[in-house]
Length: 136
Image 1: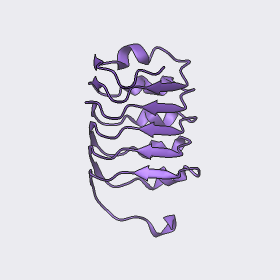
Image 2: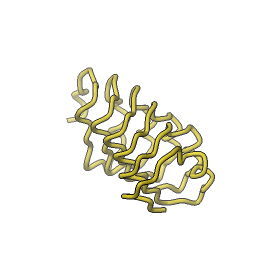
Image 3: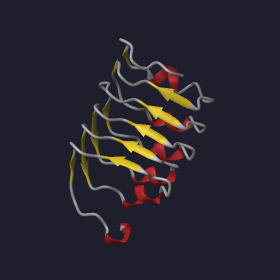
């Protein structure tokens, strides 16, 4: 489902999380609001979740880790807050872009359990801590 680059607004999540056979959900470059709900974990076949450049707020739910086939997660330029859930390590991420939000806390080591992770951009947040030496 590709709805990118329109003038769509409102909270799309209650409708979209009922579409459990989705493999690709592209919502970027609109003015969508609301929080990513915990039932996002029901979209177990999701490979692409692109929701960049909207007004999505709140924390990334831990149930994102139920998306074991998720390869591309684009959430940059939103209003996300809170910490990155360690459950992201259960996904199959190759690309994770969450820059230009208000995320805080440390980068979970489990994120690097995604062995195919080739692009990780987390700049322009309020992340703290150190990177574990075992990552290098």
